[in-house]
Length: 107
Image (cartoon, rainbow, N blue to C red; front, side):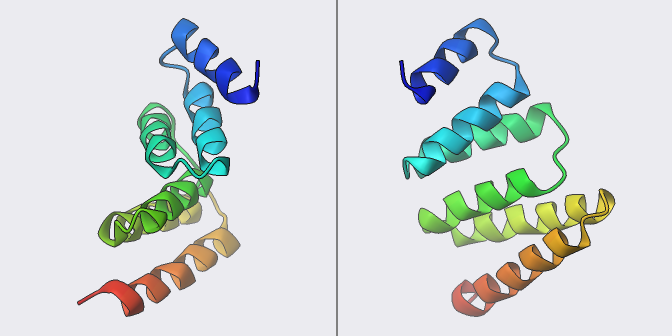
């Protein structure tokens, strides 16, 4: 059983476990399955307050899928969470990325 199968089996037993959704999001992300990664990261973010890192993964998924508006929204939310949880360097990293996306994809 590989890691993805393992987390999917955990999901069957505990569908509302935020860490299972987070783990699945990362596994799908590593396999470049951005659609499923985004789906599970969104579920995780609904179940648990994140400090910012989850929003970075979500934004990258959307960026890779060409959904730039959603990527920018995820970054904006991630910046708020990073500031709230006292992660200024993470907030600055996301702010810089957001500015790049705005410059490249805002019309």
